[in-house]
Image (cartoon, rainbow, N blue to C red; front, side):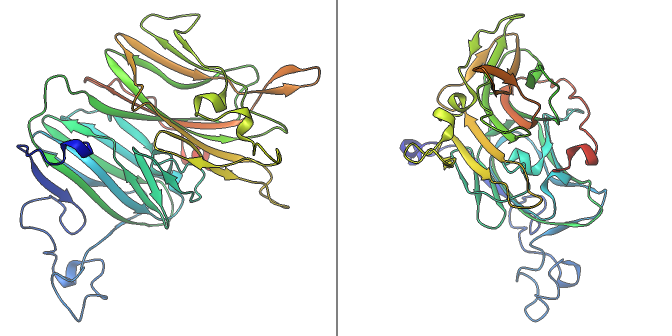
Length: 355
């Protein structure tokens, strides 16, 4: 949907799922009985229909299905507001009765908040707004069924407001399925490259990268090149970048061009260094960064297979490159046809932890 198509009438039915209407059925919103809702005390004087159940509570270890839609359609918007440590809540999405998820990521990283700290993110695909208002606008078509779950890995309950906006409609044969996959390596072994995505088989298009980059060395950390190996590439890629900040649509170390004494955060429709966490004078001893690049106007098409890597590279004495051993996490976003190959198992809670 674009501005110039808003006036076009289409054969679509709008629906929305939230804790006030778990199924999205027509005329079924706000029906929770006061005694059954999580906000029953706040609504006790007003009764049914007065914000009785606007949120869910995820118990420790619980997996909760936040949507299960039958038929064909497209999810246009997801909004949710997690509490607790965002790495401890895992988001999964399943399309068309698949056993394996096509999306699997900690909820914070999926929405560009891998460091468990708020930073404004204002882009076309993802927006994070004050509080913990996580918004996703990636279009997510499905033909038979769409199912999403949240799993709480923490030892404390998580409160979650959410809303999933979608349309029931026919889906064209050429429409592919949304995918997203999380990875983390801490620390990156010396002289190894970081793999953002691999083991993708079939035809598709790569549409975005988020990275949470924790620096474990002094000095500049972003000389490394991103590389896209596609359609049989082995030793050398078809697409090779020129530097980390270059790929994320910045330049010259993300420095203030006048003072050269600080990083300058930015958030734009397609790319950003939206989060710069600076060291304090005690326990917060490392720089940490959040960056995104959406290939909305320049998707990377592949026919057979895809692998994406990035180097962690700084400088050492004598003007030589220094392979870094940083704390790297990422989410790769792409579209392809089903079936989705099984993802490797996510790390356990201790390895996921922001430390």
